[in-house]
Image 1 (cartoon, helix red, strand yellow):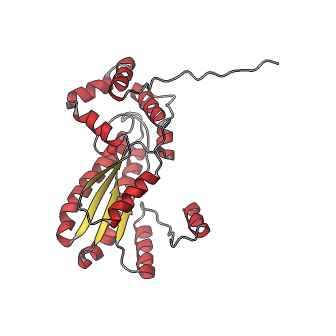
Image 2 (tube, rainbow, N blue to C red):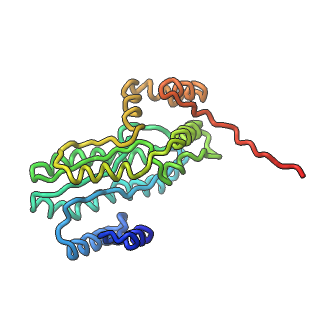
Length: 259
């Protein structure tokens, strides 16, 4: 991004920022070739580009589902395929795919986003099995709720959905973001993986990541579905019991001054 390039110049960082649209084959090819010509073989690939669309399966347009998969899943494949051959031939390299705890659990209204992250998880696990024999490491980074623009958009309750799960999920994000976890935590984990020699596949990041997975593992599939299908008060009580967190929407009062 232009802002990132400006920061690199201002802080005199040895970073070259190149434009790339992961949705476009030619854009990815051109960017990778330019980087290799300028700096030599790529040692570490980090797939971090991602978008989200919020909405129920019924209400979210099919085009939005396609857009999410194009960036979050096919974009990852494009970038991997652009470096995998040279990494395999060199018998050296590391591919780090940024997924999410959302790649291990499901909930409305993020079905499109979660489906894309489940796809990235499956892709990464298969890729790890293919590349290890060529000494190329593959790692999956699974952040919990991190203080990003994306997370804050999810924390805004919808105004027009017939599904109550969307407002509940928004209130959960809003409550957790009151104690924000900075994106630098994810960056530090990525750097740690890149500089290590570890073959560990999955890496949870953030204080909410492990608790969410533990929460899901305590329930059967049917119990999980029943919880999300329950009434609002049952949902809020369960969140309060399991996480000691009151996520009930608070009234937004407007005070009008008198003169």
